[in-house]
Image (tube, rainbow, N blue to C red; front, side, top):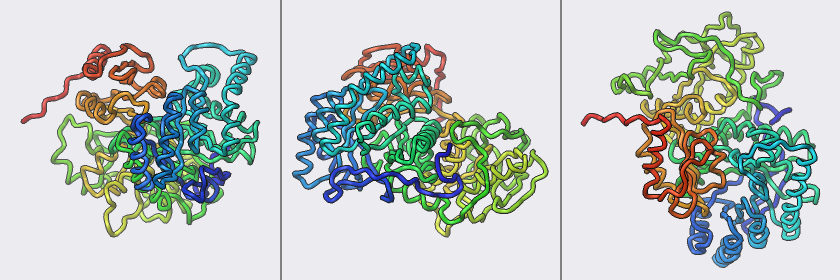
Length: 591
């Protein structure tokens, strides 16, 4: 199987075109040679027509090309008529996507009014009770028959009304049927989507795209790679467009880093026809990140220096850290083997940050680049390396983008039969003007995150960010977002929508204020139950909207406490953390 034409050379995946709305009047054509489409989602109550219209206009004003609106009930779906009518009256013809999860009847109402229907196969006319059940082949086929009966009317309406569809699976919402047959795996996500696609194709409906979203960038990358490989296996006419996104990425730097790792790495491999950056912030901010991220791809992907005859060193469909021996970076720190991925800084950065480091700080340099015994190699040449315990990196100035250069280095080491530990760099050359911090963050996240997702890298060096303290913090944040190290509390937070039962930005800030000192604890903050339990599968604790003004608390994906008044819920979450012996008191900062 293969997921792209070459992991070393950029070739955009050739997808069939799908039509969304009227391209002559505000609609878009997605796929083919058309530019990647930017989209986002409004956050207000769908029944609030005025707010829905205004938030949509605000998104369009900053360049959003498709706007998604949740339709959890038939009543919400019916109100899309008024939202769309008012938008059109104001001269706004942006395509609207109705976000459907549990109710086929809501989809059948929404399809009358909007250009795109998003269905989640794990929720649409299917069960998700985390029940363990063995399905015989006959029972499994019977379940597929039931799904087809529920889904076919929507497909036929999409054909009749010339609508588009997004078949979007989420890591957090696979059905019990899929979970019991394939497990909570990327394969399960792919097979769930393919089941719905086969029903659509049975009726000669092809105006759809796929998405495979997870809050874990490594899982997300693996899912999309597997999806594209499976589509290629199915046949050349299965070349449907792909929607990229890391769901529940969170806010601030963490949300941008997670999104850049997941979306950026796939874009550099030529995958992706539309993107959404999911941030727990005001929606227009997502479009700025989309624009900035898309602008970096031509600079980070290998479009100009063809590489051939080299076999990739990693399995793209199954994450496994590259095997290396353990070596000493200095008298105190080792890397490689089963050691943590280490953070290296330049001497200039060390000089800036060292006086401020306290003995118990988690964010601190672990080695200085200029002091390392390191072999700087040019992977475009036929180099030799005689010792596996020699730390290696790519030489500055090599005329390749960093992702390609380090993949090539790992591949050539494998061909030589060497497993040398590798130091990753976010850049191999520097421009005359330092990068803007937000751009340095995205570039470093894409480059280092993509390589870590490949299993490559035993230490990292961030140099594109000019600030000493900022570059050090960025390195640790990338490792945390990639799931390689945990030095602080990890938050999985959804971006808010009309289903949300509390103010996500306010509540997230409140939870962080009480818990951000809990190193290694992962907390999920979910506005509703649509993706909540599943996305919290690898979280320690969950804070989930259960009803207006009421919160449910989870341990993993198991609900523990129900209908807690919102005013009490943060402290009750703290109590739950204490009950499970994950709480420590924050250190007092000297006055």
